[in-house]
Amino acid sequence: MVRVEIIRKRMNRLDDYLTVLKKLQRYSFKEFTADPERYGSAERFLHLAIEALIDMGNHVIADSGLGVVNWYSDIPKIMAEKEFISSELEEKWISMIGFRNTLVHEYIDIDRKIVYDVLQNNIQDLEDLKRAFAHFL
Image 1 (cartoon, rainbow, N blue to C red):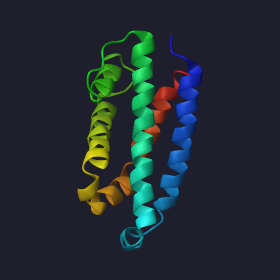
Image 2: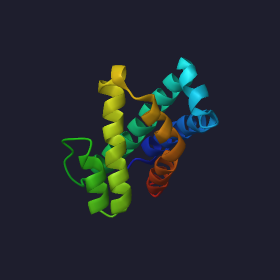
Image 3: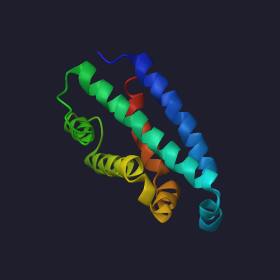
């Protein structure tokens, strides 16, 4: 059985991360890239937001006995197979996980244009996944 307190705690953290990310959206690309605190914050809070979603998905799968997770990309696949998310949201989440891997493992070579684009155009995807997990509260 899914433990509500685990989902709630991560959702609260996700809300905190989304608040910061939405504040960072107000900057132009030039303003964003001119300030290491801005782009560094965006990178970190995007990473943390994606981690929160991964943690929630992993928790739901493990506690509900829905399958085995060998790779982070297994989480959205299983969640879609069990109809907790749409196939469209599954694809977006898999892309997020790929982006997360770039943030974590290729941090020296991160393209700030991509980070800015994600910040400006993909926050709604995080919100959509958050809503999917609200089902478990």
